[in-house]
Image (cartoon, rainbow, N blue to C red; front, top):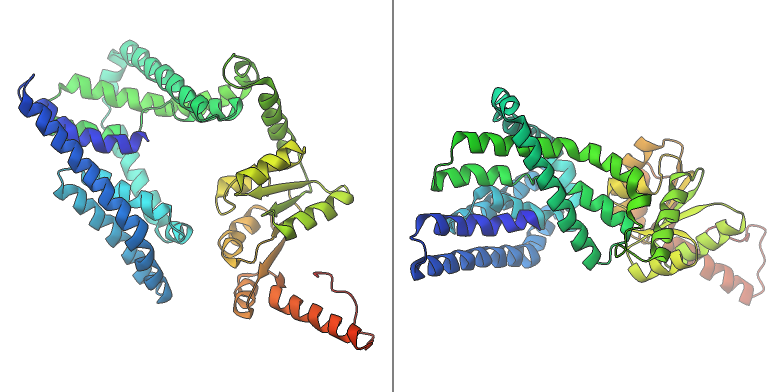
Length: 407
């Protein structure tokens, strides 16, 4: 939200600081600037919603890694230039393009292709920001920097916690999320040089702002560690959440942190439900991951370990305890999540057993090629079940007609 808000700030700041105060012309210019920002966001949304998926599908079908990478950079550059033509920042245009690419079906492939560039540019960005800080000036004004940094951290924490409360995010999650967002956003570092082009800013001010941003970013990991320990006390503050919700969330997180030799069930359809029921009969602990909020809520109310998450995200696997799990089962007949996460799963836990499903023979071959040995072929299993039932109707009994384990 704060990154997208930066787009609107870039749009209206030139009009605020270059026009005469209290004039209708200023108001009109601000309105036009806001309109340009809305036009850009609307055009970018249309491209990301309708044009982008078709382009990425066509390029993906070529199976050319080079063309796919080039296409990603072309999309980001094109939307960045569109932002520039509308008088907005190229950096914010590229950010908007990345936002739409990251929400597409191909986001994980895009990430794997551009990860080396991402690490390089991220390093350059933060190192460059650090080099802008005058160390001597920082020590000279350390009191002011510490005061303003504390002020920013406190104000942003309260604002984020208020938003989390309106969104009905449980107390512990809201506190941790608010703590993670207390630092000065990275796009503020983009706004400073943009502002300097409009109206000169004293060097002392820019130096202190950069220092405040750096201090707040550096404090975030420490604050998150502190918040983790203080959360049991903070959630008792009236208004964060009801007592029942707090206990449910805290109990769930505590139970997940201590679990070992468990099964991770990805998806809770008919197959996932039957697997969960079977394993539970033998006392095997299970963690269920699903994208259906109602399903997860029902499981939590039943006392089961479950959470809402995308299994293709590394943080989801970490929360599910993939490093200490004995089994992970992809219970839906879509091989893409298993293919995209298999290497990171095996990298975290080489001994884990992976089970996947596939509808077609070609998908089975892809899963086997990736290294997944335990693949349930839906068509094959259905065919075997049909043959077995047909033989029974004709009273045909053969020694090999043993029940299928995967039926």
